[in-house]
Image (cartoon, rainbow, N blue to C red; front, side, top):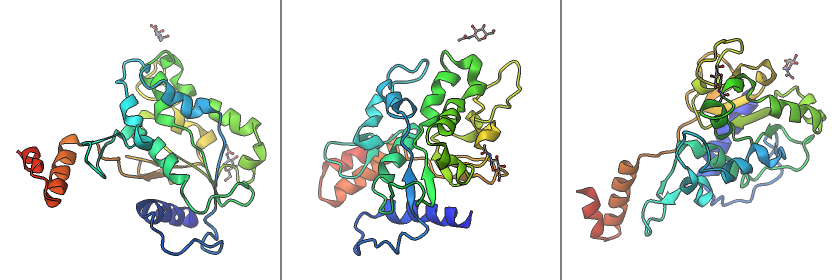
Length: 245
Ligand SMILES: *[C@@H]1O[C@H](CO)[C@@H](O)[C@H](O)[C@H]1NC(C)=O
Ligand SMILES: *[C@@H]1O[C@H](CO)[C@@H](O)[C@H](O)[C@H]1NC(C)=O
């Protein structure tokens, strides 16, 4: 576990926050930090975005897909502020990890395996849509894929080296498997099949060792506008003062 934690810290703090790494990364720097990204069918990720306006009872989130999931810029002149939606954390992370310098194409060589499955977006069909009555089954199709497609990747460490990111709080995925009649949530995180997988998500539970909290991407429009106003005033743009009013 220690190396996983170290890896995440490096990933989240060092590499994603600064792209101006002055010294090129050497193979030695990547020791014990190699990541392999599993190639999942597009039904587990990209296809879910293609349907961004079709999820029942849920707002259209298409405009938030812009700029690799960061959303639209707060203003056409804004250089660094975006109107992000927390639901897009899975895409934001997926896009960023492609720039991680210690990626490997060889799953046997990797220290950890990333599963680019957009759990939260896929859960919308169970939470609000036609699959509401089978929401306890959420995740079984992914597990089946991992067992039938290159199963040796999972078997090597029984999933202990796998991790994924979820955009929504744990309470949406922790419905007991035997709850009848169904209550809110899917059972994705209740299946023993996924107990070995490390999960990064906002609002994890305190007791399962595999859940690790990450922050929500900001989505506070008002705050963003004020931040942007300050930024624009600093570069001498008088329009910025209007935004603060
Ligand atoms: C789910 O089950 C309930 C109770 O059996 C039923 O009334 C409802 O129509 C079902 N919903 C869907 C989307 O199948
Ligand atoms: C999880 O790991 C344990 C050993 O730590 C193993 O017995 C179990 O089969 C693994 N679960 C899956 C679904 O691979």
